[in-house]
Length: 196
Image (cartoon, rainbow, N blue to C red; front, side):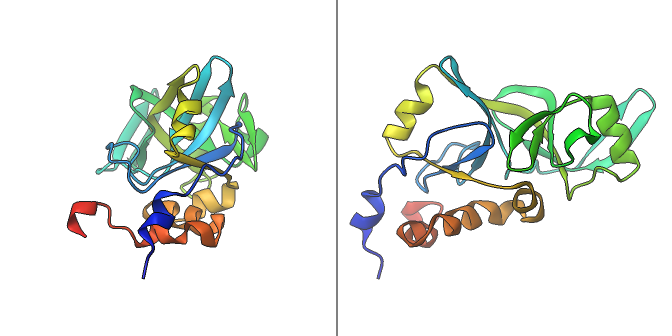
């Protein structure tokens, strides 16, 4: 039997936010972008935080055409509510994509989109090592700090292999499991508590 007090009284895990780490939403968030979400932090500094939701694929596969490059049926993810018509990408291929930003843990943000699309067409970049996103998630100065105090998020690490090889609909659960026994009760909660 699940002790509901144990679930509610879980506290912030005290890991500090940093580029390349992940935010794992608490099971009670109901926002369309952040319900049972996993967010990779791209940048965190005194002015604010930028991240991208990595486990929310869009409902349809998209076809993208850039100049002479055409990518049919490309899965694109909902990266967040900010700049939701802009295309971003993350990969674990390092210097293969020029101008990528190393986030740590074998994760890289962006780089030359033209090169990335060419490499995707050649299957050097693929769904096993790259994700494309519409938009990103952003927090203003101190906003994430306040959300962490309210226990809205836990912070952990993730590596590129886990991110890209785990089915998106299982990534939140797998991230919770990696946190250890103290958080496993979260996995027993329904998405909609009213349905319990």
